[in-house]
Image (cartoon, rainbow over all chains, first blue to last red; front, side, top):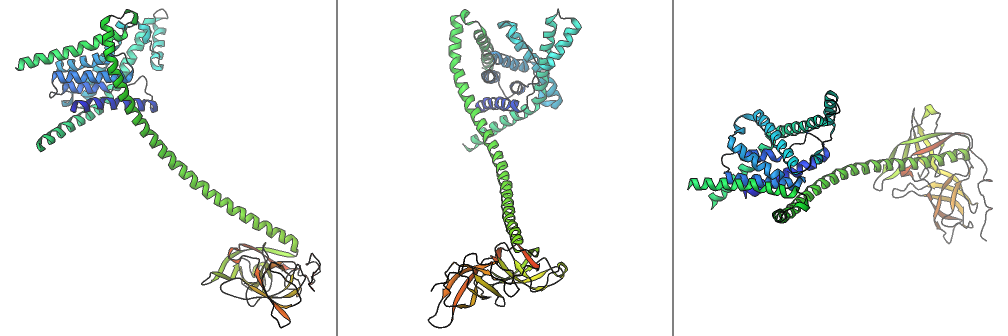
Length: 199
Length: 294
């Protein structure tokens, strides 16, 4: 039941994000609401390796399904992120909100970079032309500095801008997602304990 | 046992890490170059996708419906406020329309009556219980406006009464239905003349015509106007309508009840005739020649 709640929470967060994005467009500062959930699984010692990986898999699948990303992309990255945080032994919650934000921002940049890299491996890079105002401005500046003959420089700046924007947005939102996830987690544990006590 | 469990969990995690890699490979690969394994993976995942899409649609519809309901509620509140505002404006327009009509009729009356007329507004009413009949009205014009006792008071509907008493800025009006009021009147259709007196009844506005000969063939509904004789009221002002006629087998006169033309309970604006236009002839009052029954 706890696992179902977790997946439903992921679905709910995604749908809330998609509803809010219509009212408040933040592009390219689009946070990943699911990544902090996966990191929570990674840093919570109560979650076993197998269960955490399965939940990260399910959350990633939900993310791919709802966001329209290539199937398996988010799933792979989330399972990998879970395993990495578990191996690294991070304890985000013991070090306060600033550490949560910084650590999540860093991990989000790496995760989204890995996503772009995976896409570049499996698909031609033309499919990921990133046209957006801030990145476009930076790309234009880069082209002005390095010249029009270096289009790859402009593209790299575009990609870097998006990665940093997404990472920052994810990091800033992460304390809220951690709090919600923890609340749901403790609620389901409490419910289970009280049910056991009654039995 | 613990070691076995650990190995099992690592195996599960590894499988869960590898599966999406294959799925990603299968989903992003050009369909013409997909292997049998890619097709099987995609076929299996299509079921998962289908279920996920349905669940997402249900949830999304639920959220959309909720948002829609919230918007509907807000719109409902906005519309209710707008309806209330429009309703108030409509009432105001209706009031202004009624006032406009009253003022127009007063203007027409002023042109018809001639003489010097001043407009006045009713500022208070004396009410007689239990039927809430108006027995007297007070106007916002008084001695400072050259209003004196005995001056006729008219409205667009007809004769109201006469000024009974004045003070500096107001005056009291004795209504035509007051038992102390006497008006020389003429029945427009027949030309019959008589003296109209108020009955002063508590339950209704009523007056009677006295000294009306039995031979005058009046009908219920006949209009009664001022005759202008006696120099108290201008001629041709509507006083009321005949509502009841009683002819006894004996006597010289018949008893005629007249309902006043003016609705005293809704009286708002009036004219006070301060000077002139007090006719002394009834020649121009009767538009049709008097028709007397044999």
